[in-house]
Length: 483
Ligand code: NAD
Image (cartoon, rainbow, N blue to C red):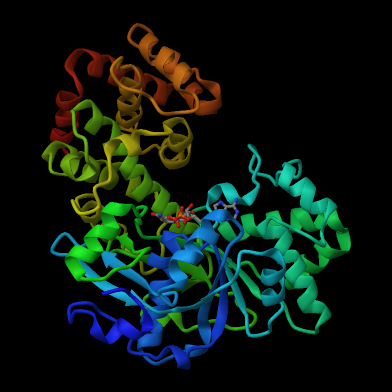
């Protein structure tokens, strides 16, 4: 059955569908970047809220600036902007039709600017990928990026998201409407701050007065988002048709786990998302730290031993008792003890959810993906915990072993190291066989950490044992050690 509003009633009973009517919805949110993640995450929370009969004036208008979005718009137009969302539950797939998006703007700057000036739009949310924020290598605003230079010179005909937002805010202001809240839902630490930096950075190039006005009047709440959402290929389109009887040109599959933590800073109001599981907090940063150090570092911790032991998929690795126990013991013994507590949050319970998410075979995540980009990920996910543990004089045995396993991985001649520093990593990792300090001497990765004797000595010992005894043996010995 081809998906559309007129066929909703004819879909198989097993498919969940909206209990609200499209005609009762009115717009409140304009979302830029209608990729898969938005449709698996934000749109699902809103759909759940609308199903309770609440806040029907917060429906989503889709928008975008890339050809990707124009293509997606064409695919969704014929199905009245409906999306099939399939949750990859290991106990059985489930499908629901999401009706939270009621329109999708033509991918055209003028159309977008005019809609941004509509007072009904009170929140503009973004999923434009980490690369969409014009952040330079030092974490600042990349004012020299050619797209920014072009928008700064042509503020009346902008093409970047930030140039368009500024033009929309100015038009809105000239019409006497208060500014919308800008809500980034991209996977960046302090994503609200990063968004503010980009928009104020561009505004400053146009006029310092504009920058000051944005700085004083526009809210950028930080938010932490989570829900593994793979891309859609013909395989998923066929699966949705064959399993659920729905012909959807652009379905979404995702894990059943979903988390959204955000700062409650919405001057023009917001939907009551706390009714459907969204957590509103004063400060998102501790939650991001938890995610980086347990979820992301957990992925890093299993990636390299899993690759060294020949596992291809993440769920295969988690079915290996040594790897699953290694993950849990490392987190319990060395990572969780140095995390700043968060009132009402149980880190052990969070770890348990990560373990079951990693073990979900329906997601089909690969070890090769987790092994990528180690020289960028280790300093973000693992080294801060080591630094804290050194400062607090707590155990670093497993943390150092994690780094040593990464080094051993980089030294394997048969592995393709996918990393911007791949050649330097592989050369230094091979040299570590006779001189472990060679790996730590990659200064732009390890920084001052290499100079810490306690860390360097532990690393040297772990490397020696890994080279002579192999990863499984060394991990098993770590597991046998009493707490
Ligand atoms: P996707 O490829 O399905 O969609 C990407 C969207 O970003 C498209 O709408 C595209 O047009 C837009 N985009 C890309 N570059 C842009 C730019 N420079 N300017 C404006 N728009 C741009 O990807 P997705 O799965 O929807 O993921 C998008 C983002 O969501 C991720 O980069 C991440 O920040 C966040 N996220 C994704 C997941 C996941 O598992 N997919 C999980 C958590 C968070």
